[in-house]
Image 1: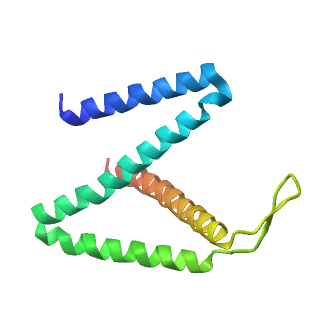
Image 2: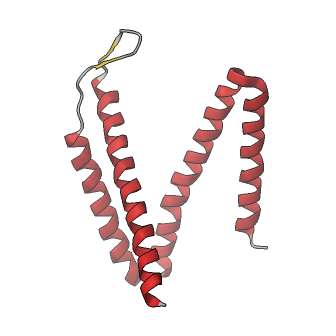
Length: 135
């Protein structure tokens, strides 16, 4: 068994433990769930940065493609940020949320999520169609 399988197993057990804690403790466990989500997010971001950098050094020819992809991603994020709205939002309790920075970042995150979701569906569909016609 490779070391990645052990890491996956540890993360799975920790996730199940936090979920079980939430089921039994109810709203008191929300803090633990948020902390676990931040830990997982940090690990994902760290690995998303570290592995491409390691790959660039082990495969210098692929480094150019990685850098082009990084530049395109950063340009897309800046473009989506410029399209984001900072208009105040009416909350269900009648209050108005008007923190412009938070509203722009939230809109940007939603736009990124929509694009990633659409790209995922397109990749799945393309992969299935390609394998269907290959046979």
